[in-house]
View 1: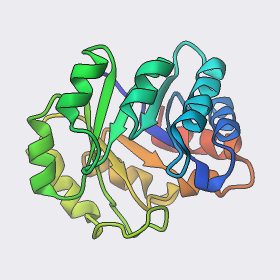
View 2: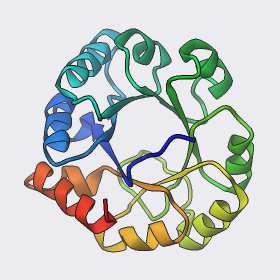
View 3: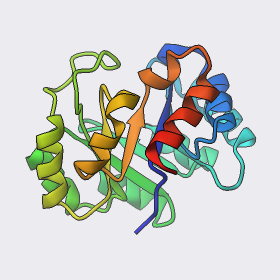
Length: 203
């Protein structure tokens, strides 16, 4: 089983140049970063991931959101898939056993299904109400997260509306790591906020 750092930072293009965001996250100590560019074409997204990879130190993992082809060609550490993306089984057959495959779930049923798949982590969320996603699923809440964490065996990445003040509660509910977008990227100093998160999570 892959060991993940407790902070899973997401460089979302909604909040600015994703490459600059990756640079700031790395400067703050983040070592597991997903690059998310929902509205970018394949070529533009590939270029972003390539540039992110060139600045990442050896101990950092860059994950590609949605696009298995971009992850494969760019040489990223892996891919994160949603419920309507390419199936985890297909992604695994393309990327092989050495790359990370993560999968989004939004309730206990989906998490149990994901636990049987060839994925390295199960993302669960939104934990709290979130504005980072259009038409989000209903919040899972800490109680729902705790129930899922007891029912599955794979590492859980908790995501959705998590602020630094509630980060430890999320870990105590069973998450292996906490995925953060807005609370990191809306701060005036992303690198400094990343360091605060790392300190809070105890890594």
